Image (tube, rainbow, N blue to C red):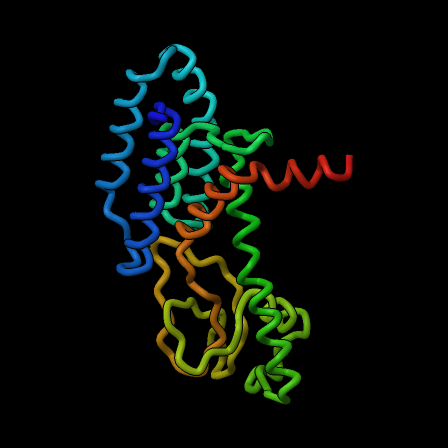
Length: 230
């Protein structure tokens, strides 16, 4: 059975996100040429759809993700490459799914956000295990508040030799203090100081790839959960 344009769009979208994720892991940066190539391909494929007007309407509706992606990028929650990935994805494979579930322009993003909770679970599990082993994970932070310590246990961990992580502590008057100020994903520098509280710098592109795959095989996780109860 020959592939139709929709199948080609999905394959190209997976290829784009796969290349971007691999590049992000290896180099911690992504060449903008990727978005230019696949963005151009998205336009090219429009001319091979059975009804170009309907396709333009679908793509146009999917592109309402653009202002959201740009806003989240500008506040520093994720990088410019992540924003471009969501934008090009909306044009390349708009609302694509092989499931019977309803999807919308925000499905990949929402699935991505849910996946990004995984490190939080990993952090709290790791910290609880350390405490059960009687490790003093807050040594040197005796003057910090209990609230800050609880927050730190969710968003980070104490690392002896941090790699690809961002520091969540600072020095004030010679004392160590936990610091949860939002680091810009494009400009933030990885921590190289030993024995530091850090938050993992996992490439967000991996979550976007995962969110899109979930959209393809399962649909919108949040909508499906809501439908389960109502």
